Image 1 (cartoon, rainbow, N blue to C red):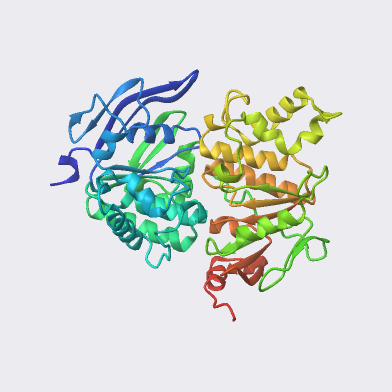
Image 2 (image 1 turned 90 degrees about the vertical axis):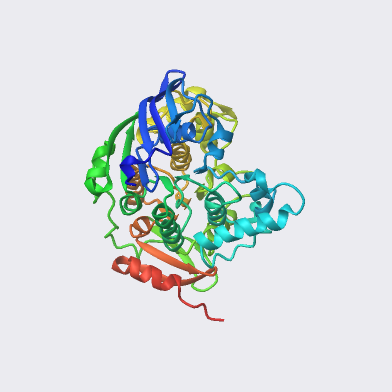
Length: 484
């Protein structure tokens, strides 16, 4: 039977959903067929996460029809979706941090209840981890809160593809590789292809466009709550895809600096394992290597060494852009404006009283400069998409007077257009003498740095500069054996 004669796993027709004056979905129609991977792209706030939440049963559209296998679904929710094999890996990871991986597996799969559930759950999750990430090295008895963000993402992905009685038919992956290094991302994408070849369906959301182009059979582009393009992946290349999203493709938006930085003063240094680390004024210094091999720990150490443990310094040397925004980035019950301004309140205060007009003006300036998609900065931070939350964290850091910016994979889940704008801001700020220390899991971002330190097993194994900063050298150093 050809795919055209099959019935859609999930079909959405004319879905409309508004949050106040904001039209999150404005007449979205799409269908997901067995045996295909759909790439879903668009800028932050385009409606991708909203339509995903409709498909997985988390949101009910105010207008529109959902159907599955040719059957109209008038009462559709999370339980119905799961019963039909719909699984979702959210950009904001959703495992219970105080429970073990096995216990989270039990929560995910209700059929694992009853006497002797633990060995069954262990077998389910370990098989899936082995299938998706061979040689993963993750003990299923570990508490989720003790895992690195990359390990948590691996577990979430394996959980979505696991089978404990109801096999997954449609797996929705929302920025699934955002915390994975190139090797782990390749393993996951290979598993997606195997799953689709066996008749499964995948909706794949990513701002890493080459992953979309390489993995998808069909690409759907969303903008302002609407589908603006729905074509076979073969009809797109990188430029056409960026153009369809409404961005101007600028390959040269951020070029590696050609300034002579070797004579600039050292502003930060640290005696790490292996090679010692230093950063000079006006440099963009990259941290590379396999995820979880010590890059984030170095950033934390650099920040701790320059921070007062009990009272914030007025003119701090460093500021930090968190990659795991839900764990150590945003204040969830605060407004967007308060989340933005918290790091620079001293510059907006007179005699310990914050000037609300100054705060609002600075917030409006950065909302415009970095295109935070909200009608009102007084809205709650959780009203924003994940990518827009990340923009707030980046704006918070840049709005301070700190001469050194520490960045822990800060562009996770940020759209390609905004990335280009951020790269331009980094270049401008570096030209003024500001220093950036940048850990990224995206090779394209690492290649933009003036110098790069490569990590392996929490040891700095190589220092690369200039034209030596390339994928071949970084991968070679990432797998280099560490001397005993």
